[in-house]
Length: 185
Image (cartoon, rainbow, N blue to C red):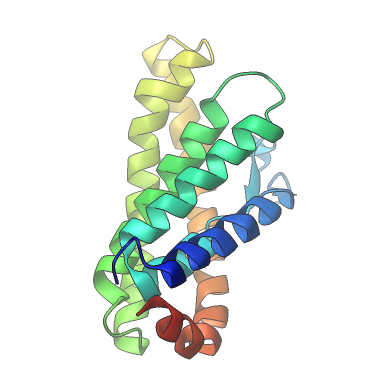
């Protein structure tokens, strides 16, 4: 589908709004990962993944970008952009492999490997982003401290987030697939 089609632009707008609303609902992970109690999981990436499966990864990336711009403008508490940058990187690194593998034929044989690869890709990409960008911005300059933070809190957090998002996608997408495919064409 062309990115300039009215249906696709409308779907991107709807999914961006839904993502932005879902960004408000954050679950603390301290009960699962006590070492990462300062982190919260949200499901705002789900609409971007859904649109990626129906209209392609570019549409999902646009939803991720717009959602994080809206969050930065309206909800940013510290004036920085670190959280939005991390959220964008995590969302895109998860949705790209999922859309690449499962977009054409989302079935049992494709969605489990796609979601597993998306989880691994997100964890790996976020280890890189956290080591080189977010942790230094937060003032953690020591390499050993960054590696410890990534290994003990951030990577387990991203794996848990990927698993939870995968479960939601497995539950939602088969029910929404026909509607999203009609709109996404």
